[in-house]
Image (cartoon, rainbow, N blue to C red; front, side, top):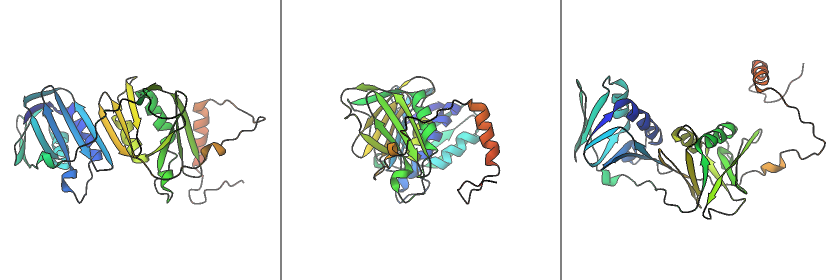
Length: 288
């Protein structure tokens, strides 16, 4: 295998794949990123067996198709520290060479055939949502989850489908965040009202891989995992097992409730100022 890459664009994509690859694992091959160069496309694959990602790389010249398993930490450092706009990456069964105008790095290689496959998106039944909307949905609910709770269901974001609607809910048992967004249904992706719990880490990684803008994102939830496909690639994650709290019971349903419209900027500023003297330890309201 031999390819020529544009360093900056390649680094941006490789950095996302590097986050998925574990820094430590009984399976040492998982501490690498697999690179597949075929005629017309280059793909990076990384997984920790719970989460997986397949990302497409642009601006790559393929001289010799092939595959390579590349050490994450070594190549990340080379891509960050190099001053070359272009680099050449070549690999055989024993080693990987990364060369620039005035630099040459030789890295140990591993057998690409031993790298686990990451599930591809081949679903005919799925939901579709604009990338910018999904980004906003994740941003407005992820902060309320609790990764340290013994209740595993609280360590993820609930995704619930309705009539052409996707509802996301995050809670840590003390606060709750909810957002709804319109979706388009293709085929028969599932019954209305079906729900899945996606791990918080996976939601963070999905948000990072999403393209900017209104590009369509395809989502397919299966019994134990979730697949997300967009123009940059495919993301796979296992789902959280457990029962999510009955979040609808928390929201007030009183007909005589008072609703107040507030300007976001001044309200946010006031809350930040009040938080200066709030107590992290007590988690209760104190009046003076």
